[in-house]
Image (cartoon, rainbow, N blue to C red; front, side):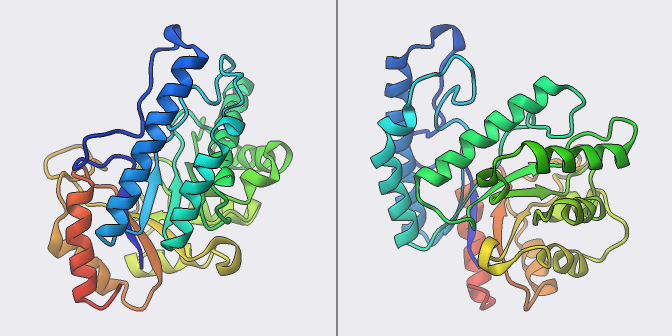
Length: 297
């Protein structure tokens, strides 16, 4: 089991998601910002390795406006060696990497422009993982999208876009996650049947929207959609409900007994855990200690 956290390290004095306003775009500004982002990413990765945090989600903002029409600069060539060195560090330390495009990535939108922009963003993020030389166990994670009043049609529209419009390099990395409002694990299993995509399992979302599957059974169902050679082991997002907040809101700090109970419930199942908890690496340190004491690392 690998345990990690997404995008931002709150201990270090740097960010790998620096950006700027579209109105102030220039190639010089782009190059400078990407240099800073990749230098900080290296520091975050080194921090994670030092502390036994071997699962990390890269920020979507490594390259500002990468999928926007304004950005015609060949940043892939310019930063090719930097990306490759980052990838070598990741591989040499046996880390697991993912990316999670923003909510505007909706493959089953009825709006062709939204679909076009969504694909451009997936191509960008997939190319980051490709430039790092990472195999297809490094994944791109998206949600099912909207239901638009007819979920069956929406599911079929997703599958059509997947099969007819997505490049093979994106399809090799793409996963769908059960969400907290629309697409349950059962819906994602339908998408898996239609496309072959593995399912990233989110325990908190499953608590919000489900079809009665007990947690252990749900984890097993999601895990069965992963092909070990191509996909690696199941990736899952872990969090718990923030008390007194809207349903599905992530907790600020890990609730250690709940995490212990979750690991007990899933004893014997193999997966990597992305902690979607607001204090980031602080909770990740605690989760690693719990998992180690239980013999899960």
